[in-house]
Length: 220
Image 1 (cartoon, rainbow, N blue to C red):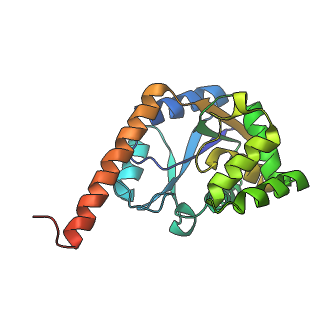
Image 2 (image 1 turned 120 degrees about the horizontal axis):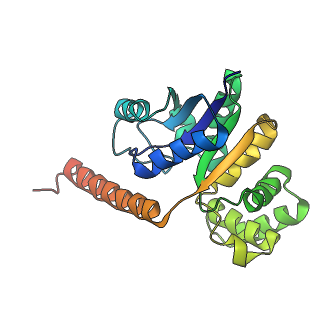
């Protein structure tokens, strides 16, 4: 029976790191087909994508993805919880997905699973820590990150694992809630891929500033 791999990504744009992740995930899972749930014209940070969603889909298909499904903007530009909730619900509704794979700061699923368990179960001690952090007036993502680190109490192994805004850990939490039978795989991001991501982010911020200035008539 054919095996199907699900991938949750933004592909903004699709680069060699994504290609490595895609091919490696196929090899690890032995999947025959791959479905990618990707954000469309807007990113999870709420800004516009570097490339349009049609180009994203074309790049994905040309590089080995078999089916591309757009994550509705309601989820794609929302919180980590809503982003993950929308993506996992779509994969679940297909009733054909056997595996899910995503990039993270580590390939150690055990430590990621620790965070996911906390987000899924929300133990009282974690809730108290989160409430304490929120009272400081910091953002919810930062307060959650601080609370998670304090609750896990293993900063040496955890501080570089949390991804902003805890997307990976939230995806794992949603899997536990929606499709507990789904097998999850994670591949650690390489330094080169992280550098490429940072460069793309900087380019995107520069483009956004120029467009904003142009709209206000301040660019000559």
